[in-house]
Each structure stands twice: as structure tokens, then as C-alpha cells.
Image (cartoon, rainbow, N blue to C red; front, side):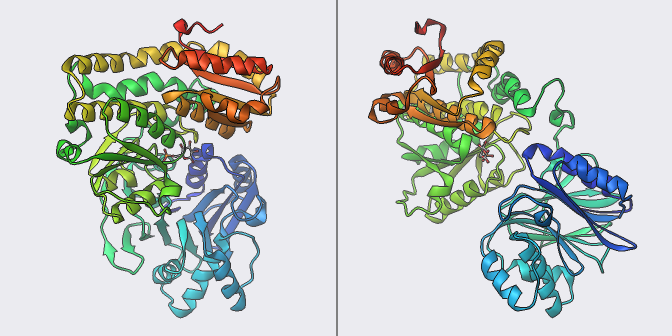
Length: 550
Ligand code: BG6
């Protein structure tokens, strides 16, 4: 969203272009100029919307824009945002859970729906509130108070051309401030083109932006102040450079991301709890178990950490998928350290699960996160910021490896405080960590060989990933990556479980990928691989040079 002294069409389109990497199926914008409210929408790329804007010589000093990833209603122009009701236009990220009830009520009141989206409900709801209260900001807040679910919203009103109203609950939203106008976006990278002055909104915040200022209130209208920060995000860091896509770039950034994350260790031979926050030692001495909560790849990092925390630090650890934990009736122990893991620090389920844990009386909380200004970091007194740099690719890569490095540091600190880490081992472990960037670089040199495998692999319909011990979560992560990025169905199994069902699926069309480092479970894993061979399965093995897999 933008409200400025200049024509903001190019700012809006460039903002959408900057966020294209997140994936979308349609795009749109709404503008207000002296002729009134105008909307452009297109199914397809932002470039098509740009062509439409050029052709129609679109201009305006106030506008909102959006790329949509269909949730309610198929991808088509009719369902693309902005949605309009009378002279109002709305864009929305998130999902309105009570949209059906609201839709029925609004239809009863005579509102006509032209899309299948949950968002259109919001436009009509604000229009209906404006009939009771002509104040645009107040009416929008009254509408928002009736919404259940997650949203980041931006709203325009034709009759108030110098104003944009925004609100957030569960989806990220920030304001960008500048002398020539004010802006809002779901991610700072969209606004780097116009400003570095950012105000992050909290859940439940609403804001009214004009060309010269802004004000923030809670949904009930209570004014609140939020800190203005200067974003350190570098414009270069979000450029693709020599790489074909962001995921490739970020895979190759892992050695640097790890060195940056581990930089604070310097040449130290011992590790201090202060790395995780001022009173970390006190908190860690008071805990008797650990609960890790996360989603997706971050959840897999948590699963790996469980092996370390139990075997090295000797502290019981459970790992929960955030979207399950937040609704599960679980037993809480106040002497638990609740560890939330997230690249973005904005994953709604992880944030809600943390609130749930706190509401159950667990107040020792710590997060490992890659975005210092994120909601998650603000919610935790103890925190470790991974320094992976911006992760543009939606599927996490370098954030995962840096999360693992941070979790290993946490394990060493807890092991030390519990008397389970000798000075000698501590120094050796830190040495191993310092070697990590180099070791990862060696693995990345395998790219040509892996590319060859991939070409062979690309035609497959399904794949099975196997691992044992702490490499089982690595197999899970491999399967998640394959599904999310190539749309090939993949599953991961602890290799020992193979014979209890999935072996039946293995044949020449089912590639089996195994993670086989030279550890105590290697011989057992080799037997599992024999089972695959016996069924004619095609094996792809990631092994240490001395694993002796033939
Ligand atoms: C998903 C992404 O939407 O969110 C995954 O596709 C990611 O790659 C997951 O791991 C969790 O994100 P975050 O930011 O909380 O680590």
C-alpha cells in the first residue's frame, strides 16, 4: 500500500515484483486518482499487470496491490484482489475463518458477491459498518473486530483519496515511512526501493496512513506506539546475482551463513550461556525438560536437536509440530524450556503455539530465529539470531543449517551446565563447529554429480528417503524438499521401519535415497539397503567417504 506525493504505480508494481518469489497465481492493484477508484487485475505474472498498467497509463497517489495464492476460490481474475464494495477496495493475506457466516449475513443485507473469496466478505463488512459510522478508520476497526482467522489487510476508500487503512492479526505487516509518503507491506524487501525506515505492527494493530503521517491503534481504538527501526536488509542480499534461482543461491550461501552465525565464538575454547541472552544461565539451571515447537523445515531441525539434547546434554526433549501443539490438550510442566524455531519469526502457528505454552504456565522461553525484527524474537527474552541473511526461497535451506548450528550450541551449553561436558570435549566440539563452513563447501562441490542424478530422477513419480538416528529427520527434510519444490511425491522412513510396510512399495520405479554417514548405525543401515536392493530398488546414497557402501 502507498499514499504519497507522487504517482505510486511503479512503487506498487516493483513491490509486487520483489515479492514474486513467494509464489502467486494472480495479481492486482487499485488506485485512486482525480477520476476516482480504478482496479486492474490479471491472472499470471506481475509483468502482465505492469503491461496493463502501462497500456491504461494508470496513475494515482494512493493505491494498494497484491499477489494472490488461491485458498478460497480458484485462481481467476474474478477472485484476484483487490475486492471492491461500493467505493472501497481491499487486499488481504491470510484466511478469514468465519467468512461463511459473515457472507450469509451480508447477503441477507443485500450485498452482492462477485467472487468466491473470503476477502470479499471484508470489503462488504467495512461498507456495512460505514453505514453506521462514517469514520473510515473506525468503521474498518469495527469490521475487523468481527473477523476470526488470520489477516494482513490494506483498505482504500474512494471518497478519502489521501488515506489507507491497514491491520494485522497473524500475518506479517509493516509500515514504511518516508518524507514523500507512507507505505505498508508484508515484507520489508518490497519497500527498500523507497525507504529503510520501518515500523513493525503487532498482532491486533490497525493503522491509518496519510501522505504526511500515520497513527496506530488497537482494534478497540486505543492508541499505541510502535518503535521505528532502520532495516539493515541489503538490496544486494535480495538480488539473484549469478544464480538461476533463489534456492540455488541460498544453498550455496550455506558456508557463509554458518560462518556468520558462528562468528561470535571467535577462537574461544569455551562457550558461554550469554550467547542466548542475559539471564540464560539462571533459566537453564531451573529447567528439567525441553519442548521444541516449530513448523516445516524448522520442525525437522528440532527433531535433529532432540537426539543431541538427550544424548549429550542428558535433558529430556519433546518436539511438536506447532499447528498440532496449539490445539492439543497437553500436560504442562513450568520447569520446561520452550524452544521455538523459525526462519521468518512470523509463522502464525509457531507464534500461537508459543502463546499457548505460555498460557499453560511455561514461562521459560527461547527462540532461534533468522529475522531480528520478527514477532517471534519480540516474544522471547532468550533468543539466538541465526545470521543466514535474507532467505527469499520459500523452502528453507541455509536457515535450516544455521538453526542446526545454533541448536548444537544450545546443546553444548546445557551439557556444560549439567556437568556433562568436559573442558576437553567442549574445546574439541567448538573446533568441529568452526570446521563446518569448510565441510559444507566440500559437499557443495558435488553439485555436478547431483545434477546428473537429478536429471535421472526428474521423471519419477515417487521417492522414499531413509535415515537412522539423527539422520532420520534429515531424511524427512529431504522428502519435504522434494515434495515442496519438484512436486514429486516423497516419504521418509526410519530405515529400520522399512520392513514394517513401505518395503512393499519398493521396485525399479521407486528411487530410494539414503543418508549413510559413518556412525554407529551404519552397519544396520547397510542391511536395510540390502533389503532395497533385493526388491530391485534404485539406490541413491549420501555417505561419508569411509562408509564403504558398495
Ligand atoms: C513453510 C515453508 O511455509 O514454513 C517451509 O514452506 C518452512 O519451508 C515453514 O520451513 C516454517 O517457516 P519458518 O519461517 O517458521 O521457519
